[in-house]
Length: 132
Ligand SMILES: Cc1cc2nc3c(=O)[nH]c(=O)nc-3n(C[C@H](O)[C@H](O)[C@H](O)COP(=O)(O)OP(=O)(O)OC[C@H]3O[C@@H](n4cnc5c(N)ncnc54)[C@H](O)[C@@H]3O)c2cc1C
Image 1 (cartoon, rainbow, N blue to C red):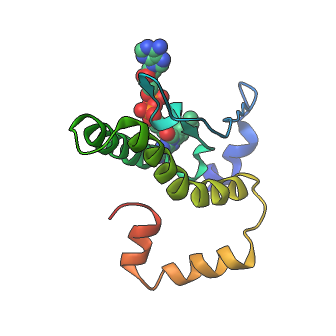
Image 2: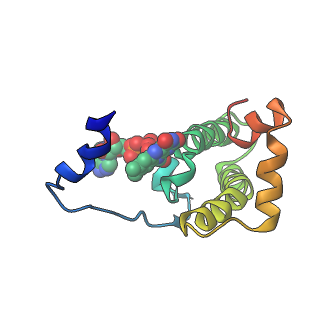
């Protein structure tokens, strides 16, 4: 116990604290002969730990769009814009939430109420963190 109390005074920092930032962006996700998924198409601060979930969802959405466009059931000209629209509709609210969290300011009253309410529902908590 005594060692624990005095240990911080005995230590010293060996190197500078380093920080970094991640650019936030939404890029056009398709063009003639190409498409973007995951961080290549849409990126946000990692503080909400959702980038991998988003990348998987994005890949699934693009696979659906490509299948629709190449299977004869539709055209790529129609399905790829639908893919981008789906991505933006789904990701934009959480992107905005992430930007707010990344400021390290206290959450808004609305977000505080949401986070408090989540503790009472396992299903809603899972949905919020994308683990359903
Ligand atoms: C510090 C930090 C912490 C994070 N923590 C979490 C977390 O806890 N949970 C979470 O869900 N997400 C987290 N993320 C976000 C997550 O890592 C990304 O959103 C996710 O990895 C994106 O996957 P991706 O496949 O789109 O891209 P990436 O994982 O970046 O994969 C792209 C790959 O393509 C390669 N590549 C690039 N250009 C070329 C080229 N021209 N030719 C060939 N290969 C190329 C790259 O080397 C890379 O291997 C974090 C991110 C950071 C920076």
